[in-house]
Length: 155
Image 1 (tube, rainbow, N blue to C red):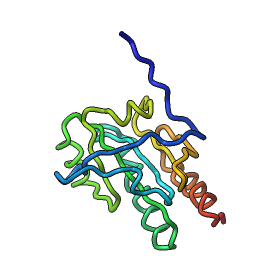
Image 2: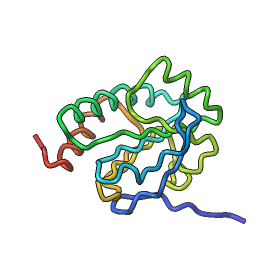
Image 3: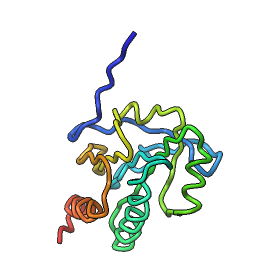
């Protein structure tokens, strides 16, 4: 039997996510807990060179925008089949945002993720506003500008 997974696209409601923290054995974190905020949902892996670039940039953007009072959060979903690999990555490149673990790959499958990193900018009502595949240093400015526009603070 073959199943086609439809990729989550701009304009659609973001599929639900309920995953444990990567560095904690606590209960699941739900995407729905962040309703009312702008969310940057990022699927990443420790073996992904562009992820090494994106993580510190998105951490810096997150912290700066939160300091400015913008209701914005980054939720990163590590898809390594061995969560220890993601934990080791974060020891070298620590971040302040929420990092979840999905070694079975259920959430990237629900989103139709094709490569790492892939991120989804989600508005406060839960609708996908932007899908971004890959990451290069200059992408941070474009993503931040889109978040500012969404927050009504375009500069």
